[in-house]
Length: 67
Image (tube, rainbow, N blue to C red; front, side, top):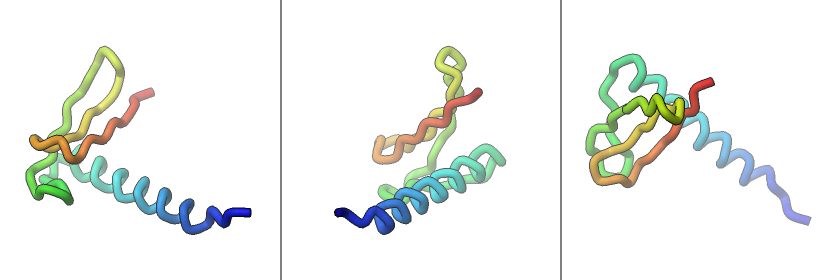
């Protein structure tokens, strides 16, 4: 039987990191990509009802669905 506790902790940490990035960006603060150190930008995709967060090089891509 596998122990998923470490995997669950990693997923929870990644989720919380992404949530913190989104929160800062939506507050108008500048946040850089952790991989390439280029600024992240937020775009609203009204058609799909979601926010898209990415850097110019594409190494970070986050999607936040809007209810």
